[in-house]
Length: 128
Image: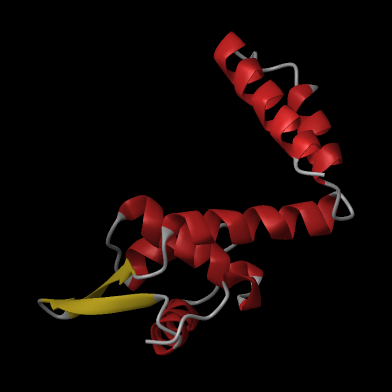
């Protein structure tokens, strides 16, 4: 099976992949219920068939319905969505994303998270 980069997927397809990952297994109806500003049921079925043709999902029959599950790793989907967010809203700057997250008033950053961030910054500086 040839793997396709997830960045080749459109926004709606990535949303569907994220829903399938979150639910573990999902029918077209379940995906439709989770989508913001959802398209038609037939459009969701078409996108699921497209994702299956590209080997991102597979399906099994459950009575009269198809139930889909992801074949692409959740980490790949997460990375793809994050890259899209960084490119779209932060001009490709990971530093601007980190600053925006750390400046959010809600959800304090724990000491353990700060230690992890310091370690990552140190490691990045050493690798240059």
